[in-house]
Length: 309
Image (cartoon, rainbow, N blue to C red; front, side, top):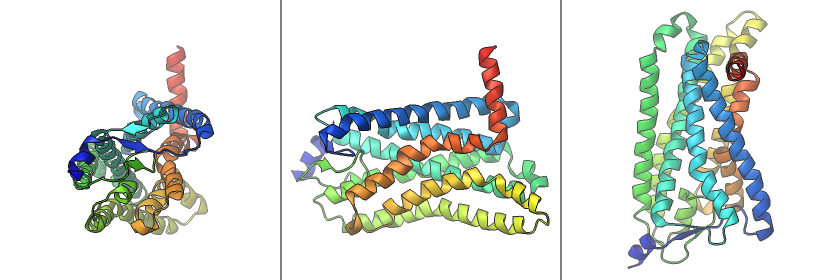
């Protein structure tokens, strides 16, 4: 009976703040951030696809990362914006699971794309003469499809696991979207086994690309240190600066939120950390990759010339 009722009742997303006076300012802030995210990432995609000189593996992965960031924020932010102006702030049980599915799938695809970009940088720096052979288009496509497949299977497994929980007492989710930790905290089921499965499976799926990035950068550092000139070292490592910044922003907040026991879960701290990788990082990515990237700047100027001509 309880399990059945949990599937037919709506959840209430508490949001970022329960203070009525904060709702409108928060709406304005996150609406602007969402627009900046959309415009910035769309520009990155258009610039890369309009300039044939940017049709390389690195920019192939970057354009797909921008597309995933658009989808990723769209899964969360529009519903959050609606709830900020609404008094009900409800989401259906099915809607909650659907949101969780796409959030997990797209977030994990982001992490695997970041790993693919790290591999790309490793090949470019370590074996530049064989770069075109190693990073062939069909191989890059296979890496993209593999990233999506693994991520969606992970999301499906997680949602099936969460669908077995009962929510017979409170239906108030102390978060701005349907995430694993707050829902486990809310459930009246015995979640001890679910917590172990979630932690183990998250370690397997998220740590794998992270270790791949770590291994790639260790190899890159070893290679760069062997370059005799300081200018050569700086030139080689400068191509990784943007990617490394995004990795730190993304994984720093993800590790803080998900790799802790449920007993250490803090509503306020986790919401702030989650905002970092769900809203701030996708918004910052276009700026991080374009401000210090001469190829993107040149492509942007070329695109603007086409628009005005």
